[in-house]
Length: 78
Image 1: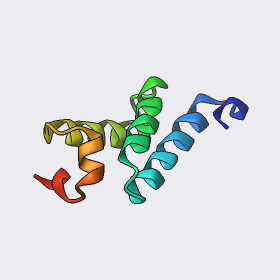
Image 2 (image 1 turned 60 degrees about the vertical axis):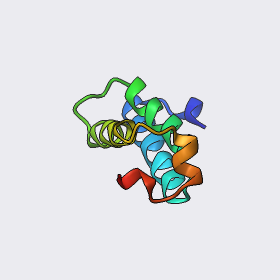
Image 3 (image 1 turned 180 degrees about the horizontal axis):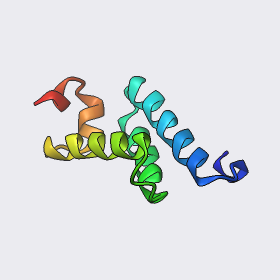
C-alpha cells in the first residue's frame, strides 16, 4: 500500500493512522510496527511523528513486550 504513496508526508500520515487503527483493535504488535514506519520517515516536526514516538515511549516505559501488553489489556497503564 505504501509503495503507491509518492510523498513521504502522506506515507507518514498513512502509517500513523494504520497504527492508530491497529492499536484501537488491540493489535499492539502491528501498531508498533506501523509507528516504527512513521519514525523511519524522519519527519520529526509532524504531529504523526510526535504522537507515534510518544506512544512507543509510553510502551517502552512499561518494561513489557507488546506481545504481553496485547495479551493483557490494561497493563500498559502501569
